[in-house]
View 1 (spheres, helix red, strand yellow):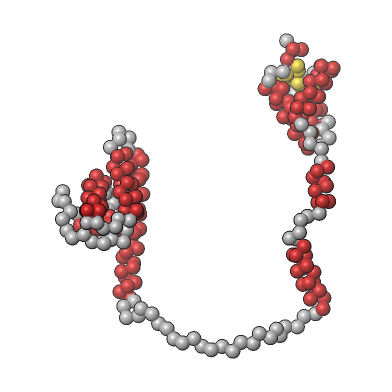
View 2 (tube, one colour; view 1 turned 180 degrees about the vertical axis):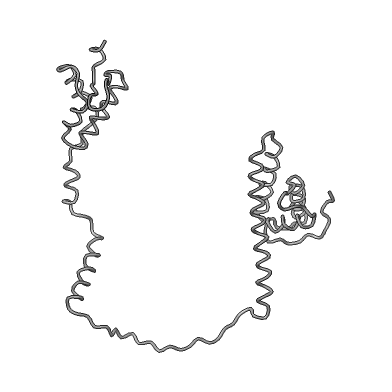
Length: 236
Protein backbone atom coordinates (compact mmCIF):
# COMPACT_ATOMS: atom_id res chain seq x y z
CA UNK A 1 0.00 0.00 0.00
CA UNK A 2 1.28 3.50 -0.76
CA UNK A 3 3.11 5.36 1.99
CA UNK A 4 1.80 8.62 3.35
CA UNK A 5 3.41 11.41 1.38
CA UNK A 6 0.90 14.23 1.57
CA UNK A 7 1.21 17.44 3.54
CA UNK A 8 0.54 16.92 7.20
CA UNK A 9 -2.84 18.16 8.29
CA UNK A 10 -4.07 19.09 11.73
CA UNK A 11 -6.75 16.76 13.05
CA UNK A 12 -9.10 17.38 15.93
CA UNK A 13 -8.37 13.98 17.46
CA UNK A 14 -7.51 10.35 16.73
CA UNK A 15 -11.02 9.57 15.44
CA UNK A 16 -10.69 12.42 12.93
CA UNK A 17 -7.36 11.00 11.76
CA UNK A 18 -8.73 7.46 11.47
CA UNK A 19 -11.69 8.59 9.38
CA UNK A 20 -9.35 10.56 7.13
CA UNK A 21 -7.13 7.51 6.57
CA UNK A 22 -10.15 5.27 5.89
CA UNK A 23 -11.50 7.76 3.35
CA UNK A 24 -8.12 8.43 1.69
CA UNK A 25 -7.28 4.76 1.19
CA UNK A 26 -10.90 3.74 0.43
CA UNK A 27 -11.12 1.27 3.29
CA UNK A 28 -14.41 -0.33 4.31
CA UNK A 29 -15.40 1.21 7.64
CA UNK A 30 -17.63 -1.81 8.37
CA UNK A 31 -14.73 -4.24 7.83
CA UNK A 32 -11.54 -2.36 8.59
CA UNK A 33 -8.29 -4.15 7.67
CA UNK A 34 -6.81 -3.46 11.08
CA UNK A 35 -3.21 -4.30 10.09
CA UNK A 36 -3.28 -1.74 7.27
CA UNK A 37 -4.94 0.86 9.46
CA UNK A 38 -2.36 0.38 12.22
CA UNK A 39 0.52 0.85 9.81
CA UNK A 40 -0.96 4.00 8.27
CA UNK A 41 -1.89 5.49 11.65
CA UNK A 42 1.48 4.86 13.31
CA UNK A 43 3.26 6.18 10.22
CA UNK A 44 1.31 9.42 10.42
CA UNK A 45 2.01 9.79 14.15
CA UNK A 46 5.72 9.22 13.45
CA UNK A 47 5.66 11.91 10.77
CA UNK A 48 4.00 14.28 13.25
CA UNK A 49 6.82 13.65 15.70
CA UNK A 50 9.51 14.06 13.00
CA UNK A 51 7.95 17.41 12.03
CA UNK A 52 8.22 18.56 15.67
CA UNK A 53 4.46 18.79 15.89
CA UNK A 54 2.90 18.48 19.32
CA UNK A 55 1.38 14.98 19.51
CA UNK A 56 -1.45 14.88 22.02
CA UNK A 57 -1.57 11.92 24.40
CA UNK A 58 -4.90 10.81 22.93
CA UNK A 59 -3.17 10.12 19.57
CA UNK A 60 -0.58 7.92 21.30
CA UNK A 61 -3.31 6.20 23.33
CA UNK A 62 -5.17 5.32 20.12
CA UNK A 63 -1.92 4.04 18.59
CA UNK A 64 -1.45 1.70 21.55
CA UNK A 65 -5.06 0.59 21.24
CA UNK A 66 -4.66 -0.23 17.54
CA UNK A 67 -1.40 -2.13 18.14
CA UNK A 68 -3.12 -4.18 20.84
CA UNK A 69 -6.02 -5.07 18.52
CA UNK A 70 -3.49 -6.06 15.85
CA UNK A 71 -1.62 -8.24 18.35
CA UNK A 72 -4.62 -10.17 19.64
CA UNK A 73 -5.91 -10.63 16.08
CA UNK A 74 -2.81 -12.71 15.32
CA UNK A 75 -3.64 -15.23 18.06
CA UNK A 76 -5.29 -18.58 17.12
CA UNK A 77 -8.43 -17.56 19.00
CA UNK A 78 -9.18 -13.93 18.22
CA UNK A 79 -12.66 -13.45 19.69
CA UNK A 80 -11.33 -10.54 21.78
CA UNK A 81 -9.91 -8.91 18.64
CA UNK A 82 -13.30 -9.16 16.93
CA UNK A 83 -15.02 -7.53 19.91
CA UNK A 84 -12.44 -4.71 20.09
CA UNK A 85 -12.66 -4.17 16.33
CA UNK A 86 -16.48 -4.00 16.48
CA UNK A 87 -16.25 -1.50 19.34
CA UNK A 88 -13.84 0.68 17.34
CA UNK A 89 -16.09 0.47 14.27
CA UNK A 90 -19.09 1.63 16.32
CA UNK A 91 -17.15 4.61 17.68
CA UNK A 92 -16.00 5.57 14.18
CA UNK A 93 -19.56 5.38 12.81
CA UNK A 94 -20.85 7.52 15.66
CA UNK A 95 -18.07 10.07 15.14
CA UNK A 96 -18.74 10.16 11.39
CA UNK A 97 -22.45 10.75 11.97
CA UNK A 98 -21.63 13.60 14.35
CA UNK A 99 -19.39 15.18 11.71
CA UNK A 100 -22.15 14.90 9.11
CA UNK A 101 -24.73 16.50 11.43
CA UNK A 102 -22.29 19.24 12.41
CA UNK A 103 -21.75 20.04 8.73
CA UNK A 104 -25.49 20.25 8.10
CA UNK A 105 -26.01 22.51 11.10
CA UNK A 106 -23.20 24.72 9.92
CA UNK A 107 -24.79 25.07 6.48
CA UNK A 108 -28.16 25.91 8.04
CA UNK A 109 -26.60 28.51 10.35
CA UNK A 110 -24.72 30.45 7.67
CA UNK A 111 -25.59 34.10 8.08
CA UNK A 112 -27.33 33.44 11.40
CA UNK A 113 -24.41 32.95 13.75
CA UNK A 114 -26.14 34.74 16.58
CA UNK A 115 -29.11 36.92 17.32
CA UNK A 116 -29.16 39.39 20.17
CA UNK A 117 -31.08 42.37 21.45
CA UNK A 118 -30.96 44.59 24.46
CA UNK A 119 -32.64 43.11 27.51
CA UNK A 120 -35.99 44.50 28.57
CA UNK A 121 -36.04 46.51 31.74
CA UNK A 122 -38.42 44.93 34.27
CA UNK A 123 -39.61 46.81 37.32
CA UNK A 124 -39.07 44.80 40.47
CA UNK A 125 -41.16 45.01 43.61
CA UNK A 126 -39.77 42.97 46.49
CA UNK A 127 -42.71 43.64 48.79
CA UNK A 128 -44.19 40.40 50.16
CA UNK A 129 -47.90 40.75 49.55
CA UNK A 130 -49.34 37.38 50.59
CA UNK A 131 -51.53 37.17 53.71
CA UNK A 132 -51.39 34.27 56.19
CA UNK A 133 -53.39 33.17 59.17
CA UNK A 134 -51.63 33.13 62.59
CA UNK A 135 -51.92 29.33 62.84
CA UNK A 136 -50.25 28.97 59.47
CA UNK A 137 -47.35 31.20 60.52
CA UNK A 138 -46.99 29.31 63.80
CA UNK A 139 -46.86 25.95 61.97
CA UNK A 140 -44.18 27.31 59.64
CA UNK A 141 -42.17 28.54 62.63
CA UNK A 142 -42.39 25.14 64.37
CA UNK A 143 -41.33 23.36 61.18
CA UNK A 144 -38.32 25.66 60.76
CA UNK A 145 -37.38 25.22 64.41
CA UNK A 146 -37.57 21.45 64.05
CA UNK A 147 -35.20 21.49 61.08
CA UNK A 148 -32.70 23.42 63.16
CA UNK A 149 -32.89 20.88 65.95
CA UNK A 150 -32.18 18.01 63.57
CA UNK A 151 -28.62 19.28 63.21
CA UNK A 152 -27.97 18.62 66.92
CA UNK A 153 -26.68 15.20 68.16
CA UNK A 154 -29.53 12.79 69.03
CA UNK A 155 -30.27 12.35 72.74
CA UNK A 156 -28.83 9.41 74.67
CA UNK A 157 -32.31 7.93 75.06
CA UNK A 158 -32.39 7.28 71.31
CA UNK A 159 -29.80 4.52 71.78
CA UNK A 160 -31.28 2.95 74.91
CA UNK A 161 -33.30 0.33 73.09
CA UNK A 162 -30.37 -0.68 70.88
CA UNK A 163 -27.79 -0.89 73.67
CA UNK A 164 -30.12 -2.69 76.06
CA UNK A 165 -30.69 -5.60 73.67
CA UNK A 166 -28.83 -8.77 74.70
CA UNK A 167 -26.57 -10.22 72.01
CA UNK A 168 -26.26 -14.00 72.26
CA UNK A 169 -22.92 -15.41 71.06
CA UNK A 170 -22.66 -18.55 68.95
CA UNK A 171 -19.98 -20.02 71.23
CA UNK A 172 -22.28 -19.80 74.26
CA UNK A 173 -25.02 -21.68 72.39
CA UNK A 174 -22.55 -24.38 71.31
CA UNK A 175 -21.65 -25.00 74.96
CA UNK A 176 -25.35 -24.97 75.94
CA UNK A 177 -26.30 -27.53 73.28
CA UNK A 178 -23.38 -29.84 74.13
CA UNK A 179 -24.18 -29.78 77.86
CA UNK A 180 -27.85 -30.46 77.19
CA UNK A 181 -26.97 -33.32 74.86
CA UNK A 182 -24.66 -34.87 77.48
CA UNK A 183 -27.38 -34.69 80.10
CA UNK A 184 -30.41 -35.68 78.08
CA UNK A 185 -29.14 -37.42 74.97
CA UNK A 186 -30.95 -36.72 71.69
CA UNK A 187 -32.78 -33.44 71.32
CA UNK A 188 -35.32 -32.09 68.89
CA UNK A 189 -34.06 -29.28 66.68
CA UNK A 190 -37.49 -27.61 66.57
CA UNK A 191 -37.66 -27.45 70.36
CA UNK A 192 -34.27 -25.75 70.48
CA UNK A 193 -35.45 -23.03 68.11
CA UNK A 194 -38.79 -22.57 69.88
CA UNK A 195 -37.02 -22.17 73.22
CA UNK A 196 -35.13 -19.13 71.92
CA UNK A 197 -35.97 -16.00 73.90
CA UNK A 198 -35.04 -13.49 71.20
CA UNK A 199 -34.12 -13.22 67.57
CA UNK A 200 -30.45 -13.04 68.51
CA UNK A 201 -30.86 -16.23 70.58
CA UNK A 202 -32.58 -17.98 67.64
CA UNK A 203 -29.89 -17.00 65.13
CA UNK A 204 -27.09 -18.02 67.51
CA UNK A 205 -28.79 -21.39 68.11
CA UNK A 206 -29.11 -22.08 64.40
CA UNK A 207 -25.46 -21.15 63.72
CA UNK A 208 -24.30 -23.23 66.69
CA UNK A 209 -26.07 -26.31 65.29
CA UNK A 210 -24.43 -25.75 61.91
CA UNK A 211 -21.00 -25.45 63.52
CA UNK A 212 -21.49 -28.66 65.55
CA UNK A 213 -22.61 -30.62 62.50
CA UNK A 214 -19.80 -29.18 60.39
CA UNK A 215 -17.25 -30.14 63.08
CA UNK A 216 -18.82 -33.64 63.18
CA UNK A 217 -19.58 -33.29 66.89
CA UNK A 218 -23.24 -33.96 66.21
CA UNK A 219 -25.37 -35.44 63.46
CA UNK A 220 -28.80 -34.35 62.26
CA UNK A 221 -31.25 -37.16 61.68
CA UNK A 222 -34.74 -36.93 60.21
CA UNK A 223 -36.50 -34.12 58.36
CA UNK A 224 -38.70 -31.14 59.22
CA UNK A 225 -40.16 -30.99 62.73
CA UNK A 226 -38.90 -34.50 63.51
CA UNK A 227 -35.22 -33.70 62.93
CA UNK A 228 -33.10 -34.73 65.92
CA UNK A 229 -29.57 -33.81 66.94
CA UNK A 230 -27.40 -36.70 68.17
CA UNK A 231 -23.94 -36.52 69.71
CA UNK A 232 -21.44 -38.26 67.48
CA UNK A 233 -19.88 -40.44 70.19
CA UNK A 234 -23.35 -41.50 71.42
CA UNK A 235 -24.36 -42.64 67.97
CA UNK A 236 -21.15 -44.57 67.51
